[in-house]
Image (cartoon, rainbow, N blue to C red; front, side):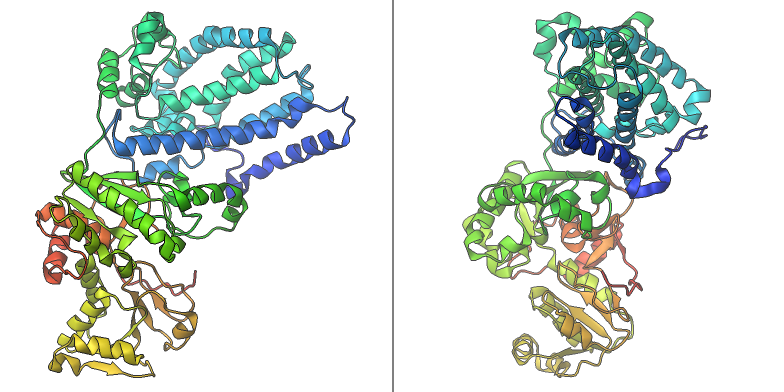
Length: 624
């Protein structure tokens, strides 16, 4: 929102929320029905193609978002290093409003304008006129409109909303109040209206013009330099006719320079070109890929989790992962990356963060939960993990946290397989088990004397049981095999606190993977479920309480956080991710994987000292 919002700031359909696309529905239905029912000679193909044009613009923008986030996370050719936070993501969620507006105006023009219907697919003269009219009046008028918008009166009421984003993303280009977008559309309609009046407009001239505007707009705000230097060497005058991402980036950091739309020509004429434009461009071109200090290795979970990655839909990534019914409609799109990942793939950089002096990156393995349960996929998964570990080591990373990857201890013995294969490995493998144990122990309400241990047992479960029994807390299990295995790890004195009972009366349940709905039904009313696994149990009880998986709230000095970690709330990080950061900060030159456990007390204390905050126990008993 602008600092002093002016009139027509809000979009007319804001009140519709996620249903805003219904404003196009009557036009789409009429256009489709008319095309399918009329005789071939009477069909208006240009009107029918408006919907595909609208959809292609949305897809075009989304591709730019994904590519930009991937490239800026890796760091090569990145222009501005400052962080993007949730506030910016929230402000830019309505980037598709301008697509709805353009679609609506195209439908209106097709119906009510002279020569607006039955537009041919191609007219060469119309395309030439579109280019000339843009290079002339549109660029010139935009330059002076843009300068006017930087006058304090208009800036405070409208344009400051756009400039709230110092570090830009492709969609930042279209984040403006409604009135400002109307002004832009009047400008950009000059070539389209003129060619319609001259009767040489075509589907290609109109659709191509809108696509070019999107392309150059997104490119100018993508925050990585991609225009090669040889292009200007071959054609030197091109530097006055086409801007670069670094050129426009200076406008967002300096504010009073580089006002031009796509052609820097007018900045040169009127003396508003930033003097550092050339040097920033050249420095950005030669900038190398960033070498991380800490790598967090994770993987996809459910098929739709690809949309919740930071490289996916920005809005989805900024919220905890929850299944949404409308994503099922996208199964044709969801299916093909799944099929590719069955047979081929490698880890990719999905996110970058900064923690004090540490550079952090998250790498994702393109494998899904279901694939971890398939024996024939294990070799492929381990190969990907091994390649990622070796790549992190080659890049000079200090620590690699295994994230979700050691969920199945039989897959690679929780990382021990890689240590056996590479005993001289420089990067330290940290699975975060000790911090997960510490968080669970500190999540149990004070004064608790009895707990129930349910679900699949892991080394975390064994460590929790040991700590509780040694501390005088009675731990109940319901299965004889589990009781026997746990008993073998305890001393005689601590073993007295381990109980076998089919009736689980305590109201504190420590739960791992595999907790069924039937098991949850056996819990007393008001039971608090505290997960010790990486995946949360499904909330089956309305009369019980559910804690998050082991996690802590990140401190403010963790920068560039604009996405959620799987199902965790904003700025909440899993124990497995935090452990890698703390190990690197403390420079603990040890591995923590396989059967190895780090000091629970030591890592808990260090996590608090570095600003991580324990979460309050959730009192929301509502099911998923």
